[in-house]
Image (cartoon, rainbow, N blue to C red; front, side):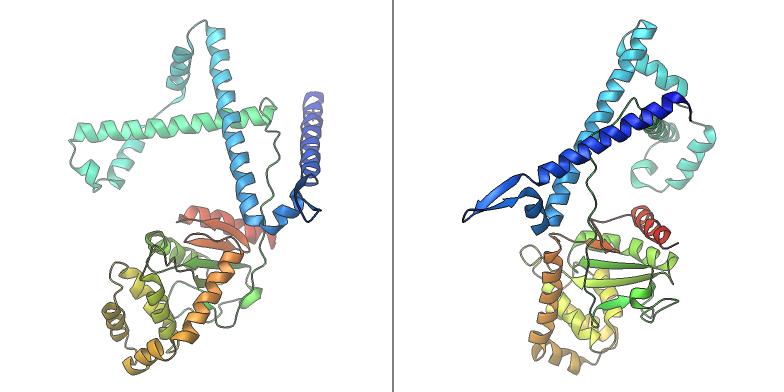
Length: 357
């Protein structure tokens, strides 16, 4: 390591150390008093880890975004000054020199999206123009990311605000959790790992009327397929009663299907028919997966209190860990919300598997 980079590394370390130290000091500052007893900011954060982490992360992300934009603005100004031209012209020339879109790339995108409704109605020339524009924007983003990456490596851009430490939640697992080890309804038996021995456990809080929960199902099945033998997937009820009136009845019906060993078959039926969850629909789906209708109806009436208690337990456990919407996932205790794509699942799961090596 040359002397410049050695000095740079020390400077960045000291800056980081000082900011972390100031953060630790801030956590010792008083937040409020109750009957004369002072509660520090750090103690307050411990009472609601999830909310404070989200707030700190939002602040960090915003500061990082501002830092990146500030650097880019100064980067373009510096180039413009060196070239004795306007910022707009300097930026335009820089990007034009670096953005390269090949005919091969254009052809691949045209084939991939040939049946897309917005593209298929255009003429061949218009389609090509749209694709060239799309690829150009994608290249532009890649160039921006490269500029920022180089600035961070050289030390010209340093975010001093400490990145908040991601909390890892210690969830409790129950014997009557809905668990599977692969994408098929039959994948309820452990494959190469069992329970807590699996390298990765995903706990999903969702509900059957939530459109985002339905949207993510294909990606969750792909995850279970590609990581089969390394993953345990648990699904828990989190019905949002105030906005989805049929989520709870659907959850109750699903619990009753579990009593006959066909929870995952019924689960699939409900997500395949999210817009049709009336009482009649729920009974129809029971018939379609060959449930004993007498037992199913008895469960819906006589056993409803027992089943509802399990749903409430699931809901309350999620709320205790800061779940406010669906779907929310805990990947080895790391919380993430929303209709994640396969790529985001893969990134987090690969990180967890790497820790096991």
